[in-house]
Image (cartoon, rainbow, N blue to C red; front, side, top):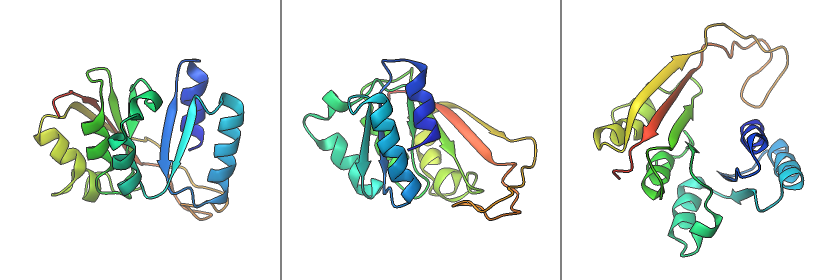
Length: 169
């Protein structure tokens, strides 16, 4: 939860965000507090815990649809090997839903497109289509320490992908 959630929530008053994360970092808890205070608990919901367990649990709940936002955008974690699969298979709406990824140097292998990658499986099963990946075109050197990058690290040239959810799964 953070910048992306704030961006989506600020676009339209009808946008709702459900965020699944461990929320182990102090800045994440501060972000939850700020987003809930700014947009209300009816528009922003934080589900704390291991998303490998909390995503399926959320969607198996008989009343999950009352909390389910209109699904325009899905973003699964690269830390859980089933998030993207669980999110796509649970979507009550399709053909207008976009699956996104942001990867820290691992998008073309491992969890996304590797031999057992989630996106590869979703594509092969016809669950997603029209995959487009792009790479940042400039290098960005950070000038201080961050959670995922130390001072002097090049964080540019990351790969991002988007795909349409077909509704077939």
